[in-house]
Length: 372
Image 1 (cartoon, rainbow, N blue to C red):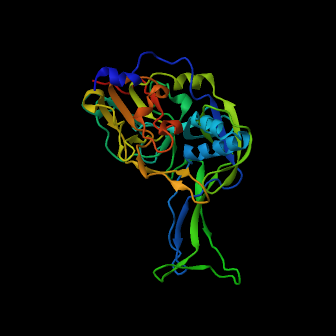
Image 2: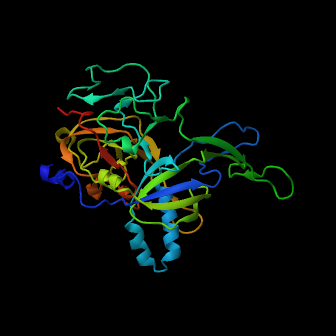
Image 3: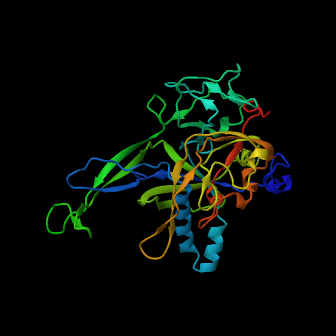
């Protein structure tokens, strides 16, 4: 690969002229917000709990926009063209009275001691290892799943900055999971319906749904390139009702999103890299021996969405693994802003996953990462 081939996404200026993501979509639940459907349970064994996924991915928001466009645009071809232009990013969350200062996942080079609620160490790359300001590699146990305010991003040092955690301490994220057991009853008596399977066995019709209760003083936040009308909508796989507001994105945030990420950046949304069949930790077109200095990441997590289709049954996408938000990349070749990265870097199954904010990245302050 030549330098010209990666230059489609390489850095040529500090910022672009116009931000692709111009709107803030604010979602406030009317009751429980989101539930992930669990496996069916036996009437004799009700022990178990389905996996949770929260906040909902941008695929859920994409479905909300598509349903709205379907009502507004009767011409099928125009509808497809309009939907194809959509771009989203998220999920994020914020206090309801200050949605423009939403919270994003903290980069993995910022460490929070167990039991603490602020950033303790800020690691930098010296060309050989990750180290703190004293040149040491910190040891011990650290919190995971932390979030930091977007308007703190440009600070030269984040040590001492408050974060929100998905673990049990005094600064929890503002939501909690509440499991619900859903039975399907027989029509003639108050007993759970039993389904006969082909092999002669029986299966009960109980399943667990993990509804999520969001603190009423907080909201979910997504970024989008188009405006949706304010109102009440069904949102997520279980169709819970939410109140949706759409605001223009602050100029400061638009400028931040259009900055070239340069040689060191962190993901603020999950990234799905690789081919249509294989998931990797970076785009398949990168020649990492020449262009990638190092990366700092954690275990990938499953990523899947519904593709739609005719009838009641909706097709599922291929199961993928996403590089988690917070992953830090240090490049030998500087890159442009995320919105200028070519579509070829992203897998395609239905839409290009860049349209759903895959791998949205922001530059790290130079004080954090010093490539060799």
